[in-house]
Structures are given as C-alpha cells and as structure tokens.
Amino acid sequence: MQNPPRWVSTNGDVDRPNVARLFDYYLGGAHNFAVDREFAEQSMNHIPTAAMVQHTRAFLRRAVRLCVANGIRQFLDLGSGIPTAGNVHEVAQQADPTCRVVYVDNDPVTVAHSRTMLRDNAGAAIAEADIRDGDAVLSAPEVRGLLDLSQPVAVLMVAILPYVAEADRPAELVGRYRDAIADGSYLVISHLTGDEQPEMVEKLVSVATETMTPIVARSKSDIEAMLTGFDLLEPGLVLATSWRGEGEPETGAEAVSYGAVGVKRPNG
Image (cartoon, rainbow, N blue to C red; front, top):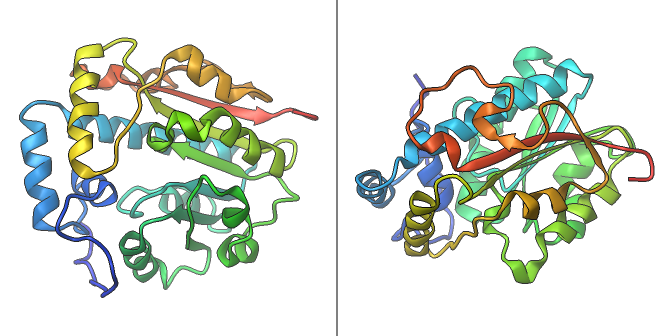
C-alpha cells in the first residue's frame, strides 16, 4: 500500500478533473481529489478507462525493464504525470539502484506533488516544462543535473503524444528529441489508436474534452512516421498489450493503444 500523500500547496486548478491525477486514481494512487474520483467513476460507467491506463502502465514497466537489461541507466520520461506506484524510477532502480530518472510535466500542481514524493531520492527528479519545447526540457536544471545526453538515454513518450495536436507536428517533435540524444539511445512510445476499437476510442476522445485536455487518436501509419531514425526491437509496432505481453485479460481496453521500443541508429 502506498504511503498517505503529503499534500503541497501551489497554484493550479483543483476544481476540474486533471489528467495526471486521473491516471493516479486509475492506478490506485492517493494523489487525487474528489473531483477526479467522481469524474473517473462516471467515465468508467461507459469506458474501461482504468483498464486502459493499467495496460499502458504494464507496457511501460516491461519496456523499462528491457532498457535496463540492455544497459540503459538514465531515463527521460516526457509528460510523466504523477510518479505513482510502479512508475519509472521504482522499476528501473529496483533493477539497478544507479539508474537516474527525470520526469517532465507542465502542470505546476503535478510537479509540486511529484517533487515532494521524490525529495528523498537522489536519483530521480521532475522538471516543469512543456514537452513541445524541447529546448526548455533539455536545458532544465533537473535534466542537466541528472542526465548525460552525450551517453545513451531512454526517452519515454508513453501515452503523451495523443495530447499533442496536429498543429504541433508530433512526428517532428519526436524527431527533435531524437536529434538531441546519443546514438544507441532508446525511444519508448505508446499511442492511442482507433484502428481496432473505433467506437470505444471515439467515446474516450469525447470524454477527454471535459478535462480541458483534448486527445487525438492516430492510425498505425501515423505512429510509424514518429519512429523514423529508430530500429524497432521485436515485435515492432504492435498493440501495446502484445508488446512482449503476458496474456493480459481481454476487456476491449487491450486494443486501444500501440506500443514500440526503438534504438536510435547512427545518423538516425
């Protein structure tokens, strides 16, 4: 069981459901408010949102373990939300305590809570920045202090790119991070898709508008365009639950997201 949250005081909207706090609730965390819990319970009457989030977290854990097994010891988690139970630093540091993790989120409340949660962990930190501003992310004190980008790093874009609008050119955004990291670095990506469950995903996109954080579902070919310059590890770009999965139960929620892990090739 998680320790009770140590609430912090900061500016931010606590009167509307917040994506990071919703994810925390779906994952069994304690860093959420009544407005989040009410919204989450209502959404689960129509969509298996908790199962979707839990499948995504299971994919993240598998991918992080693989990165550590392949020699990666530093992680940059973009659009991380609150690092609740089973997040990157816990999984990576359990495998190797020398692993270093920097989370990035642009919500000040999320960042404040996360800093409180991580304050006793010298190998993990969170930077407040918008992932669409790669320069701001990569120059953040937390990133410069914990990570050496001249050496291979795992960049995690798990369930965050659906929040990047077409106008912000998501494939080019991924490319900017690719160009900033060393050859041999890893990209871990998952992305919402309506390819397999279009009606369910359409409902999810509609519900997301109520959080003031709209999302975009994309096709497999759209996501493939984001992976330019990376050699994908087996089994390639597949449904996230199928990516080296462990036979997760079928609820419909297992077919709403693609996942892949790639390695930056030389001159990628």
